Image (cartoon, rainbow, N blue to C red; front, top):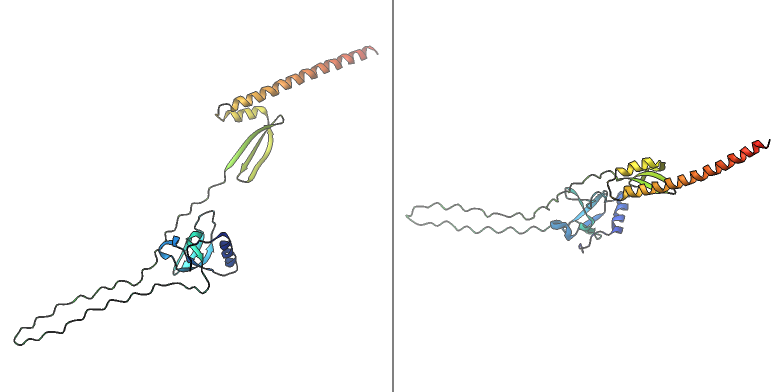
Length: 225
C-alpha cells in the first residue's frame, strides 16, 4: 500500500461528494502524519480550507482530529485498520529447586523479582490541534478620481461596492487631498484646478463678449421703432 502521496484536488472533491451522500470514506495516513503513518481512518467532515490547511477531519480510534491533504491518501479497497502485533513476553527464568543438607540450618531463599514486561503497543500520539484564527473584516477602499472635468468619490469593501462614484465639488476634492501627506499629490490637484479655473474664466469672457454684442444689437432694434 503506497501511502507516500497526499490527497489530490480531485480526490478531495470525491471525498466531499461521498460525505454529501452520507458515506465516510476511508483514508490511510502518509509518512507526513508522523507516528500514525500506515494506519487507516474515516473522513467525517471537510471544513473551510481558507480558514486552515488542516481541513480534513478524520476519525481513528477514539480521536477525531483535522489533517491536511498531504497527511492522507485514499485507502485501497479491503484495507482495514492495521494494528501492531503484540511482542512475545519474555519467559521467566527457571527457579532452582531448594537444597536440602543434613544437620545444616535452612537458609530462606531470596525473593526473586518478577521480570518487568514492556507494553506491547504504544498508543498513537495525539496531534496538537492548531488554533484557528478568525477572519478579519474585508479591506475598505475609498477612491477619489478626476476625469472629464469632474471629481468623483467611490467606496468599496472587498468585492462589494458600498458607494458608486458620485460627483463632488472641486473644493471638497482639495480638502480630501489635503489629508494625504504625500509630496506631489496636492500640487497635482492644484494644477488641475488652476487649469479648470483658467478655462472657465476664458469661457466666461467669451460669453460676456457675446452678451455685449447681443445687447448692442437689441439697442439698435429698439431705436429703429
